[in-house]
Image (spheres, rainbow, N blue to C red):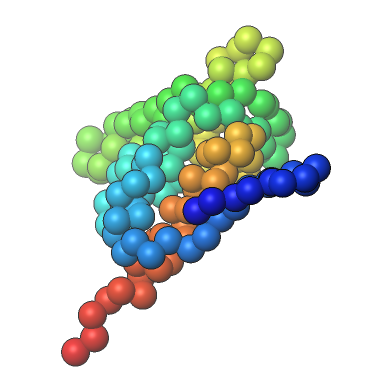
Length: 140
């Protein structure tokens, strides 16, 4: 693609649909999400957030909001009754702009706003490529 500015104009962002197959587009995105590993640290919200280490976010629960960078997603197992499977909880840990390490129980998180434009773009591309890949199912 060639873009020329021969005057006082301004060239902004240019985008176009990729001709690459969705599987190839998914492989180019810096993270993946597995829906088949139900309950694992690689699926769902915990799976997405654990792959976005360093990303700037605004995390909100019913009682508080904090802005900072994602450090990790912790998984804790608590064995209350030896006859039952351990209870698993996951917490998002961020380094806040105020210099605090803040933990959020993922069951209480209402929203995680992505502050960085690049991270938002990666998530949007992943969603688009995933939607396209869903339409690739061979038909008999």
